[in-house]
Image (cartoon, rainbow, N blue to C red; front, side):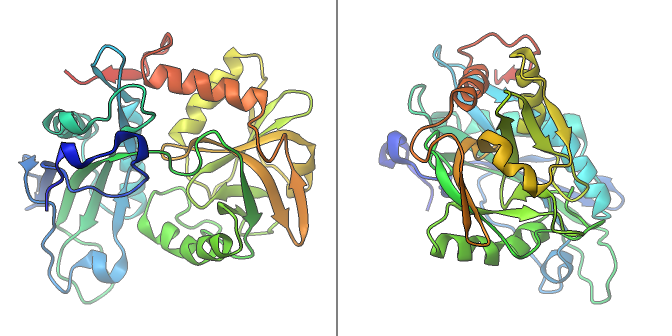
Length: 340
């Protein structure tokens, strides 16, 4: 049943799906992408032999629309989501959806569901989920020749605990294999993390951190976000790895950290160095910046700045990033786009 605005509590949305009035869909068939359009259908019809059901040929993205104080709506670097989906699609042997068409489709969905963009000041936003799936009927292991590109939207609140620190643990399992699909935003990577995340939740943790799949020596990322640490000397450090997803939030924070004199660096981070960080956090579109209060590995618990309060550097970066996204702070890099 389609959601009604009057049924929503903007201050207590959680991070869950609401069936909004409009989605967007486009088809790839006969060797080309067909013109896409808004649709009131919030379902996808598939053959029982559809490629995506058996061989997992799928990629997706996640981005948000933000209500500004003046009532207008911002998107944050949507072209980078479009470009990352191109990279993911090519890795998964899929025909990419064009970048310009992606951004235009996102804007159409936001505009069509404008009344569901949460009010300014609630801390909530409109989450957009573009995805592409292989729909050809196949039996043998071979790439699809037909695809569906679809976008749905849903209003959401905080993914974890906002700017409140949370406890995390380190998984004994891998999220993605070495030289595998870790840099592609594809469902299989997340499916492989479900067991570890569920185990972490059962043990009282917000989520788990994965180590590199080759040596289990270096920090990779969390199940749904990248990792960063602030050294005791005040340097912003984030892992560089061939098996983690290139984060748009990370790219943005590397620039903001540079602006704030934090001498940011993206490099391999041995897990042994974790105790050198005065602050740590998880960063991503859904997580935004979620402070890591503690990290437990093999029975040893490392506490960062505080288990109850976000560190000063993390807080400053969070305020700057969110301020740009909601239009409250200057945007010198033209990262935001207004939905007209």
